[in-house]
Amino acid sequence: MGDYTNIPYSVHLAKLMNLDYEMHAECGLALNLSVDRLICNLDKIKKGDFVLFQFQTLFNCRYRFNKTNERFNWKETDGMDNLSLKDKNLILDFYSKFVDAISMEEVDRVYLIFDYLTKRGVKCNILYWCNMDYYIDSEYNLLLDEEKYVQSYYENNIKDIPKFISDETDIDDKHLSNPMNKVIAGKIYETNYKTN
Image (tube, rainbow, N blue to C red; front, side, top):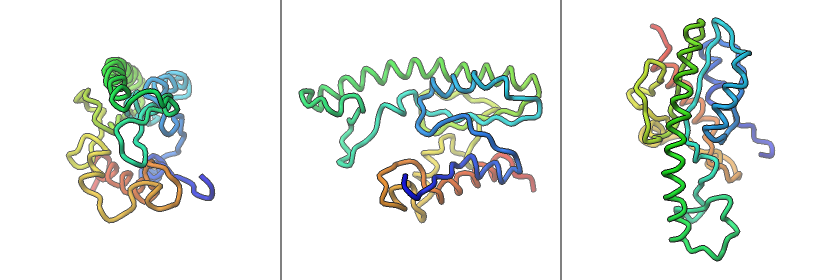
């Protein structure tokens, strides 16, 4: 990313909550890989710790929009010129249904792990980044005002700051900008943790 350093919302949130911060995730990581990282790090989580898990789709690392905003630009088929856009979209629709089924299982695993951790004195919260068509209403879930999904919150409420890295730099990157990450952290804190 050149001279640009992206500071995730979770770093800002830890500062607001006056907590030490350790990231075990990775930007754009698929849901199943994020769950695997959580499981691999269970031995590092101790009584009194705070764990925040962000749900995004299993699909996340596989699907993106290109500059023309065509619906399809699946990474593994970028070089397959012999497939029409219609055929690519048919593949994508099938893949989407497959991914949804796997995502539901991964979401359930996180809630079960959090039940285990909570019984051992760990504070656990879940943040839904986007609408996955599978939402479990739970005391673990964080909201932004009354909004369940971070993406819906910033799309519907934030107009006056750059949303994405590409909006504040010449880097073609649709991850949230530093100013947007700070706003999201502030809203999470204000809605869920701030005591008057």
